[in-house]
Length: 379
Image 1 (cartoon, helix red, strand yellow):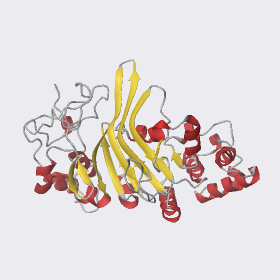
Image 2 (cartoon, rainbow, N blue to C red):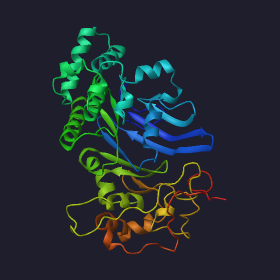
Image 3 (cartoon, rainbow, N blue to C red):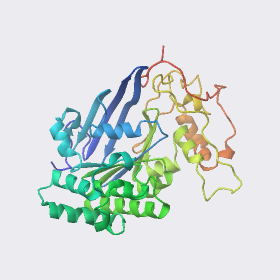
Image 4 (spheres, helix red, strand yellow):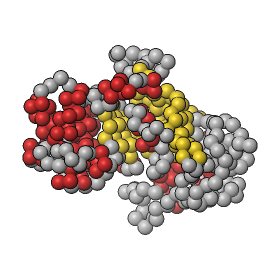
């Protein structure tokens, strides 16, 4: 199917189109609401960054795309790849998609690599599973990819086991494996974990080059907003399993429309700030997804939360603030024109109003009622 053609019942021109993705996990303590109504669109050759704290649902969203979640997960919604509904695909079809069409760079290479097989053999196995090539040709490709990601003496390293690699080298081997079959989409879950700054730059440059040269799309999951600014075309910000803001990099960084995004930016050091100006962390902790808070999930930690506007009782719908720039915040229509969020992101010390109506931010885990539906009032 031509990626530029409209996806059936999906977004025209989308390579990957995720709509209303919901992921729950059954546990002894109850149902964990890990992902709640997430929408994503990835276009061919573009880089989409997914940003958020640990526990926000980023990795669960990525794993659900490839059907890699455990049997305790209940996944609903729609995940279309080139118009094909992956949630309805057979296990055989999913095995064909994984690696050849959609590849994933896992966050922890130590557990992703098999300790009893040589690194090169693992890459060869994946190449031959998706390509009709000889073992010799597959091995040559494996050595080529190890060299491409900056591993010295790649022919020698291909004959070694994962325990003989450093942490950074194991991560690079995982990236080589993901790139070996020239997939149409790469899901990179913290791809530069355990790498030094120089190698990080090399890996990111490699991913960017692949995207430009082959038209490969990338979903980049990261905590590093600096990586996002330098590499991504579009950004999705997640919190407590929900999408809270999405737009182009310029929109999200320069015209921030959600207090959580502004808080993430405010907690980063910047060259254009006074060196004596302290960083301002986001107070409190992410909520328990067993019992997400009612209303806006961020309201217990938000300095702008307002009971009158429904922050504590009504799930905010996505509101447009520009072309494809949306935010799920009740107060954003007021805060954005006032410039309060932009000031917080650029210079936290200039925003002194801690709360709009005296709704005190609640530190720690939130004990509240179950999940909410956007635009609804909690009982």
